[in-house]
Amino acid sequence: MFVEKLKEEVYDVIAQERVLVLVSMDVDALCSCKILQWLFKCDNIQYTLVPISGKEDLAKAYLEHSDQIKHIFLINCGGNINLLETLEPDEDVRFYVADSHRPFDLDNIYNQDQVKLLMKEGETLEVPEFDDIYADSEDEFDEDNDEEDNDDGSEPSSKRQKTDGETSISSRGKRRQWERKRQDILYRYYEFAFYGTASSVIMYELAWKMSKDSNDLLWWSAIGLTDQFVNERIDSDKYVSDAESLHEHVMRHNHGTDENGVSINCMKIAFDTEMRLALYRHWSLFDSICHSNYTACRFRVWTMKGKKKLHEFLADMGIPLAQSRENYTSMDVELRNNLKEWVCTSAEKFGMDEITYGSFNVQYGFRNKLCASDCVYAVIALLEAPEEASKSDKFLEALDSLSRSNTSLLNEGITMAKTQMIALVNQVRSLIDMHQVVCAGPFLYAYLREGTPDLKMFSKPIVLGALARYVLSAYVGMSKNKRAAALPFVLAVPLDTDKGTCLVTGVPPIADESKKNFLGRAFEMAAEKTKARSQHDYFDPAVIEIKSEDREKFFDALSALLL
Image (cartoon, rainbow, N blue to C red; front, side, top):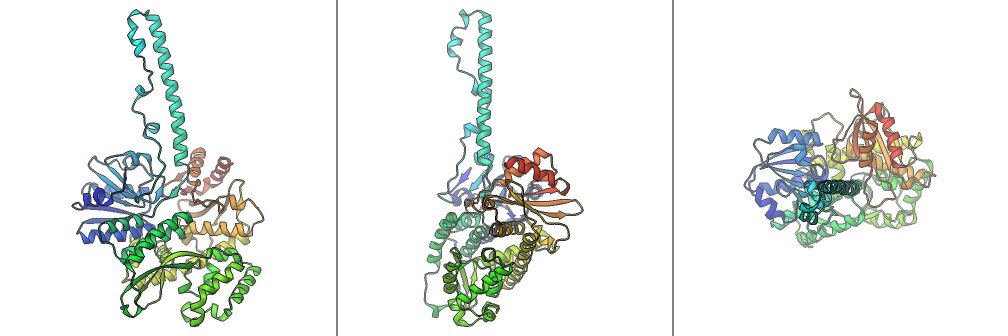
């Protein structure tokens, strides 16, 4: 069931209990986890924290702790799967789900006792009526035969049998009609996968209602929201709406304007226009433009024409090439102070009207500004590092990097993020130059071959999704095919050579601004139709694992389905 009174119906219930907190491996989930940890620390609530990457991990973690813990808090996981069917819990177990994945599983929504779905106040979802989905028994479809029953005594037995037979046929007909309608409703409800309010924003709202919010918590929720925007999980209207509500809290917590009174460890958050140039404060302007999805694809920096156009862009701004290649902190102060204004003015001339967006930044004392998107890139790099460290170690390292006291770890993440972006651009260039993006009719697809550089880096769901969006943007920018912008893109990458598996992800068309993804449902149907050996373990339905041998027939079935 949906819960909007978060304090009364959730927090007050678990305040005296030991809680099992299951956290998905993404930035928004980590930010929510930090906020929840802060609240638990304030009220001395005991908890066990377990990072999980898929449904298998979820079942395993629950099984390990089910004997001792009866209150389970799930962050960015569990909302879109039937929890009671998957975990088979006892009747006294309670699940509290803060999950941004949509649509929610209907069994979770209509369970009144054991499953509580945390929602932002005022958020609405189109949910089918209970009676359209669930039927108690065949009796619901029996006709009302009161009149016939009254006359039973005067009717011959043969006529009564005939009437009973007609009633039975009519009842079965109604049942079939109801089943058809139900299947149609379910198909339309589960057809598109999309994202709702960031769970970190919901957690911040809980802290605010309990009067325990602070600048740290506000900053974490801003990072969680920016993660959704950077990874194109929500449309711009949803982002603007949620950013506005956080902006009000920013003004409430950061209303002091006396710069002389800033202490060395003071934390100040601001909402300002931000450029779509990844990590430019920690890189050179030239490198940032070359490796940011928005600018790199519009300039086509991997071509000679594109490089020439980039040099023209820098000349139009009046920034010398030598200065643009300098680290941002080493640039001339005048250039640095006017950079945003100059970039915006020149970007309009080069057809890049959307080079800025509203975002949050933070300043600790007198140190350099840190933008929310910088933190997102750094945390993703730590979370999905190609090193062979355990999942728990990566999770804890990424979680620690969000702490104000751990800026050295965050800087390490920023360095890793730059390496990741260089690898992404090199791979995009390779796929475009070698014409490896293939049009399969209703969708585009590409496959990274064995021996591809940085393959380990791309075999992670978030990085693979970023690569897929990058390749699609580059292909649409370069292609003469006018339909390209209206086609979704599927990308496959080898995952485990010993097991012979590959990871497949799908991203919606560039022309579709709703960010709703129908490929998850299509993957499921294609795998079922071809009997392809696949594993749908990730919470994002548009990411699946399949046997490399079955890849071709899987793509053929997908092509037939989407026609």
